[in-house]
Length: 288
Ligand SMILES: Cc1cc2nc3c(=O)[nH]c(=O)nc-3n(C[C@H](O)[C@H](O)[C@H](O)COP(=O)(O)OP(=O)(O)OC[C@H]3O[C@@H](n4cnc5c(N)ncnc54)[C@H](O)[C@@H]3O)c2cc1C
Image (cartoon, rainbow, N blue to C red; front, top):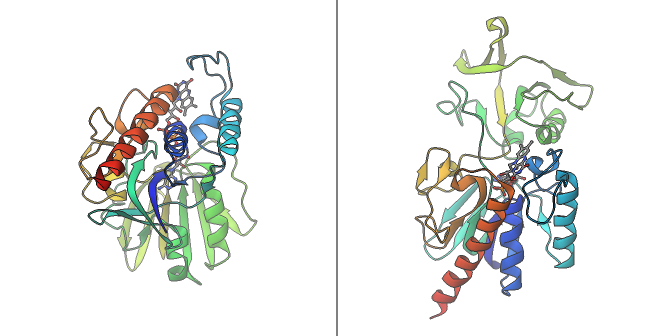
């Protein structure tokens, strides 16, 4: 099936885009997770969201969920690895290599906060991976490490522990990880990934310690936009868009933190609305 619009991201930007597109009778597939966004659920108190003073992030997320349920919009819990512009449609590749098609694309992934580690990008595909589900078969019976940037990555590490001979987990956050007993947790901060003697070495800042693995998985909430959609015009960590939220590729739009500062809920939601209406206009123009 080819959807009218695929939306990547379940924060306020992506959710508002989904609601608006559905109201305009477009078929929509929305990718993200049922917890919506960590940036939403982690906020203790939000004071600048119009009409909802002093709301907690959790309550705002629950209100968003009720709105989605009311409109019959489901979130597909798949992590999109790549989206390819095929000329007049987009082909999206999920974490388990599932493929999806849409005529228009809205990117609402939020922004990648962390800089790549030294050696990370050079060794991608050569002992460094961004996707546990995609590369699990390659690490069967091997020793691997997972560098997890937030708690949502623990699930991927647990999955790898069923396949690999050993998993070492480096949490890049303060919360205590909840992982199966066979996962070794090292609370040090990796600064560099180095390929040496057929292994990927993790070098940490604490005493310059060095650990060697067959493969290292670097798992963050969002993938850098230029890597997600080849050919996309980017500006640092952001996607270049015009006032219609249109990116440089035909039928491709973006909204929320990924389009630039300020990083705010209401700006993300407002841009989601504009991106969806622009995508609707684009789809209608294809019919003429
Ligand atoms: C602790 C905290 C408090 C904050 N407080 C406030 C505040 O009081 N007021 C305010 O206005 N703003 C606040 N912000 C900022 C606000 O959270 C962001 O501006 C807003 O969440 C951005 O929304 P977004 O839709 O762009 O993306 P996000 O909320 O970042 O959501 C993006 C979602 O897309 C998913 N995703 C990413 N890549 C993929 C992929 N490849 N496939 C599938 N899913 C993907 C992610 O997992 C995530 O769930 C706060 C942020 C934090 C961290």
